[in-house]
Image (cartoon, rainbow, N blue to C red; front, side):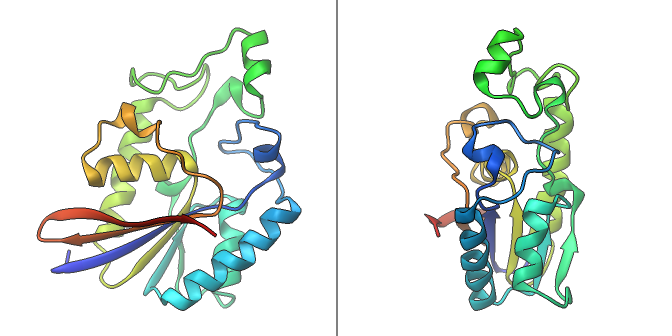
Length: 193
C-alpha cells in the first residue's frame, strides 16, 4: 500500500427485499423506486470521486451501480470477495418467518451463519482476501458491496471485534470513506445518499 490511500465503500441501493425486511444474501431482488434514485445518486458520487478502480460484488444489485458509474466498464472489476453472505435456509425470509421455522443466525461462532449457509469463518476469510485486494490497489478505490461485507471490512480495518461489527448501522446507499496512512485506517466519512 502507498503512503496514503483512500477507499470508498458503497452499500447497494434499496431493494424490494430490503423494504420487506427479508434476508437477501446471494439472491436477487429488484430495486424499489427509491433504490433506482439511489443508484443514480451513488453513480454520480462515484464519478465525482474519480476512483482508479471500481470493484463490485458480482451480484446484480451492486453491479448496476458500477455500470451506472462506469458505463463502458473500463475501470470496473467484479470481485467475488465482495459478495454478500450466503444465508442458506434463511435466504429470502423475514425475521418472523425465521422464528416460525426455528431458524437463528449465528454471526459469532465461525460455523454456518444460518443452517445450510456460508460459515462465518469462510465469510471472514473471503472478506479479508477482498480487503487485501482493495488496499493493494494503488490510487483511489471504490468497492460496491453489501451490508454484511461493509461491516466486516470496517471491523478488519478499524480493528473492531468482528462480533461488534454487526452493531454498525449500514443502511442502503451508504457511502463510507476510509483513509489509510502510516499503517492505520481512519474512518473519514459515513453518510447515506
